[in-house]
Length: 377
Image 1 (cartoon, one colour):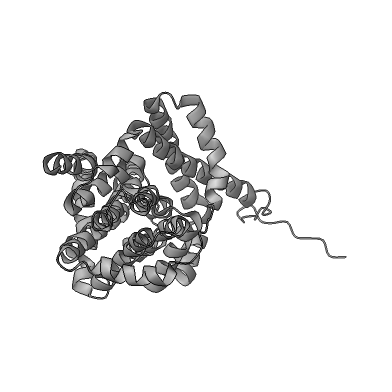
Image 2 (cartoon, one colour; image 1 turned 90 degrees about the vertical axis):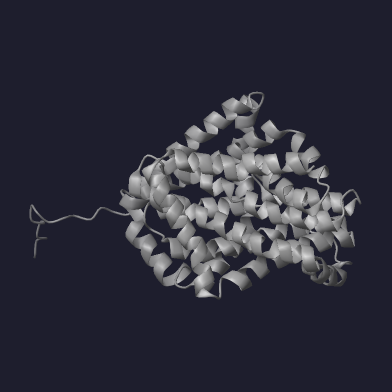
């Protein structure tokens, strides 16, 4: 009979999966849940601050240029481009807003929605290189959307190409019945978000403070556990499967956003992965473009439910805008590099001075749109 040979003192003994890896995966799932709940709480806090102001703001857009900046400000206040575009679709369907004003508003919503992942990146602000990676990964989304609007908004004013082509598509879908879809993530996170709002909802500042504490805390532990537990396995999965090339990353971003019905969540979830060094800026860039396309589905479903051709036209204009931006910017390397270069430049500056990212968020997403609306209305 042969007796088992005991391991030498220096040899490592692998522990069973259920003793070591499984508890860590459970902890990772709990941290991720807390991260998603914190984003939901942050959005609710902004909605409570805005209250009926957002509805009045959207209804007050009088010209396409004002509509563009109303779309930016309204979306940053309620932290949801899906909500902004759905409100716009409803107003257009009721005849309260012309299509010519509504289309620039959904363009502005595309810029406004990128504020969430930029706010999430601030959770890494005290950690040097990690912050550089996270902040550049978040702002590449900002710069692409700003660049797309800078190119396509003047073209829209001159030619109304979005209105023309989207109205043709709307006529094909005019008789399609309304559809609904519930985000599976919302089903899981909504009870916790509602509980937090019930406890703190009368004090939006308290709700925002609680959401930021939960956000920053979950981000910190999310990065730690990703580095210590699954970094090698996740890197292999991303490199060989999901983010193997730009097309796959773009399709994955679109599919996830359609599933969860929130580009804010889709883009925010990769920020800690970038901070941990698991995803690169070049991998995240096409993923965010896919998220831009995926987020248009919510407004399309809302427009089909409204049933008015003008509402469907606005929803298709949102889709065509995002597709046009990708087709104009992505295929040409020199142009495609611009958002990447700007994101790196701003991240470098922000790493040297921690006031720069705070001022960037405040001025770009809140103060400048507010002042332009105030002046032009």
